Amino acid sequence: MKHISLLKQSLLLAAAAFTALFTGCINEDLAECSKLTIQVQNAAGEDITNLGMVEDATLYFFDTNNNLIEKRIVDKNFILNHTVVDLSNYKDNTKLHIVAWANLKSDNQTVADPKSLNELSLSLKSANGYAVSPDSLYYGNKDVTSLGSGITGGDGYIPVKIKTGSLSIKTSGLSNAVRFYGLKSATDFNYYMTRTLNAYDYAGIQTGDSVTYNPAGEYDSSQEWETQGVQDQYSKGGKQNVFAGTNLGVTLKSTTGSLNAQVTEALNVETGKMEPLMVNEGGRLDVLIEFGVDGTISAKMRITPWGVVDDGIVF
Image (cartoon, rainbow, N blue to C red):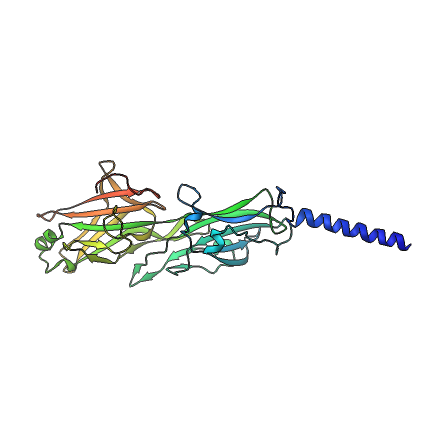
């Protein structure tokens, strides 16, 4: 009897070890027991994780009823090192929907504190009635089924893709406008970007209300106004982050009320055609506002996709 009891114990231990082997991701070669990581992508879906453009990511885990189960925040090293998103706290074959927002650390936007999937949204903050420039935001989502500490179906990743674009504005001939509109100085003008939505929903789709940016600016040595921000040799003015949008507008106003004009299209220096102003996700819009001696206002623009640095076009 004692021999039989020992045999049963041995069989039970062997069965437990076999189960752990095939459900605990001990054997990393198993296709059905695989790792889940975070992959940073550009607008074209190319892997740019190693460029280190994402400082942090917030992961939201939802069940099959779209209820929030947990939220995790991971840092830059976690992403750069391709650290595994550990799912060992879930039972095998648990179906999860994971949503990720990245680069929220600077807190230049508001993320709803959701209890369910459809309550998850991200929106621009506002100051003095104008939209605040957001951080360089990335978004992604992934449906997975847990197995051990990983997922079923082979190694996978949560793709987080750039969602924001950037804008630069600069004037040319501003002294003409000062004289024509009877102003004291160039500081009597204000500049705005209008007609872009202020939020993203749980699926990373733009929603919300139309808002206006009042970008910070400065004057160069020739007293032309330009947006403040990251400068490079290919843009006019400093680049500021904005939400993507089509059919945008740049509004020009004088403090005296003598000028209130909106530019909604400009000469695209690449195509040679008049086109609507637009900012693509991950792209850049450079706008040059030109003032004639007779007070006329015209504009040129360049629309640049993500990753294009020097396209050889003289702006």
